[in-house]
Length: 407
Image 1 (tube, helix red, strand yellow):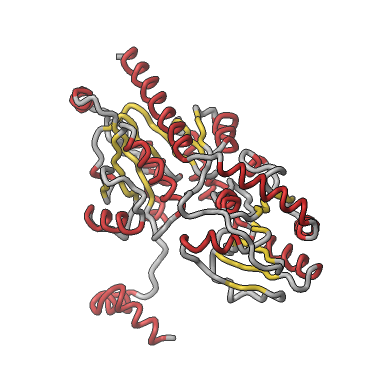
Image 2: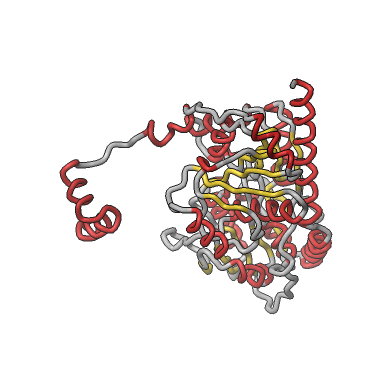
């Protein structure tokens, strides 16, 4: 164990850094350094000269502020999808990393994004540091921390908040919850994933907000016909993501397995090998996105519960010919319903009983499966992209008219 720590230290700090670290002793937690951006109120002022020069070009431009990303990050994938739509439809986009540590140059960022996020239009500009931002018609926050950067950047006409989930709910009630919630009071225009979030923005924070809905990648997800008679349930298992209810789901599946001893459960989304699981299961860990549709199609039910906004998974499940089991509530029912999905409460026994009922009623299960396929095939990312485009153009037009009237 000590040898491994020494090797890790040498890899991270080098020889001189490791020696210095040894004599310094254990590092202190730098709370102020970590959260200093919360109290940083240094503004980038509005420049009338930049505004007039920009207007000469007659090109609407957006600055997007994004958090650091990993390979295949779902949140970034969705951002890039809509940015690409805007780029193809006359709005130019620049993207800037906020609070980055992984990328030390624009070129390294571009290489990474083009390798792992080929969905992003090649005409989108990518920058590794928000200090490089220049005037734009609008600026867009894409996560709660990036909202603090957007708050301070005033060399723009409009400020937008691209909201994919209610991020205060990611934290226990405490400092981080407050940091995240405060961003909804900055006066930005919300562009939200679904009406649940739009209603929160409007009703709880008096924001202006528009929403878009979801679709799916029609090249990746296609209807599969289940080839065997084994009763099989997929569970999106993310113990590292509390809002995805891993413990609750595990209890429900344990009760379901008691009712159906030969049930096969398939876990994917994270490695669950460290957990004691007393029933028959497969653990597939983090899978390639290209393999997911085949997996969903092999399962009678796909258990994809959530305590916050639902993800794209229910639609991807439907598109693959399986049946989504989702949690009841406004956070889900803005998109799914009892015609195209199975809805369950947050009680594990009720979850197990409901799934048991449908697994033993092939006609009811098939009816929902067909309704799900029909529903999802009528969705379109182009339709949703147009909603985002319209929200951006409307916001900039209204804010520019207000600016000119003041001026």
